Length: 376
Image (spheres, rainbow, N blue to C red):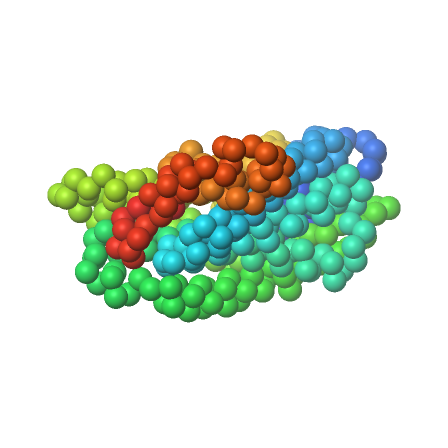
């Protein structure tokens, strides 16, 4: 039996595309045998390649997992948006970038319920829906990367080039650069949108990529440059300069400002770098000598785990703000006291006292320079 003919279309598509969208491609309630046939297995090309059936595993695990990520991520990022708008009033360029980062995460989060349904029941939203939600996935992903980069550059200017930053780091400049960034985000997301479609597989439909071989390689290279090489380069350059400046000035407020953005950047790498590395290995299997049955099986499983890990990242930034951003916790308290607690408990004096007002006003920057030093 020809191994390529017996190899399920799902695994063939996944191994031949640069953007796996693995969790969308494993959808369905297909309960067929768990034995599938892969490409040549060493010197025994006619022997079947036994692969773990990840469809059934994903159908059980991904829907509840993505549902939890969606709930916590949506609540957390909406709190960030409301806090920046209602409490901080978007008074600095940093606020503008943090707002756009939260919006990027929200766009990404909006796709999770559909991928959860896809994993359990197949794709039922048509080809247009496939392209729309894939587009939101890419836009949210690349938007998060680019605004993390802008936040890092913003910290660099505020600390290393403080005099220049007073003139350059304005709200207007933040809005303009954010608009330009969204244009770039849409452009780099277009290949993933164009080469994604809904197609029938066995008795159900799946939403997944369909890249030509040339575009497959180019898209993987582009993704790795934008997702790994560029952020890493920016981080090394900016934080090297920031570290030298902080060692000279010993400013505690500036230390706190750097700590937040540094944590956001590091957590991004921890959650998404493994997926991009596995994506490289899958796209260029022959180059890395991994085009055999055992390696293919392991890469399938690694892709499932690493992409799931990466997709949970969209709910992490609000947690970082809560644990690292001291001011953010106080802003959240002010927002809760003014807009939620008063409605729930109108007779509770703690929500009407002046103490909370004094605390919040004491931590609200009175000048642009103070905002530069402290951040969120």
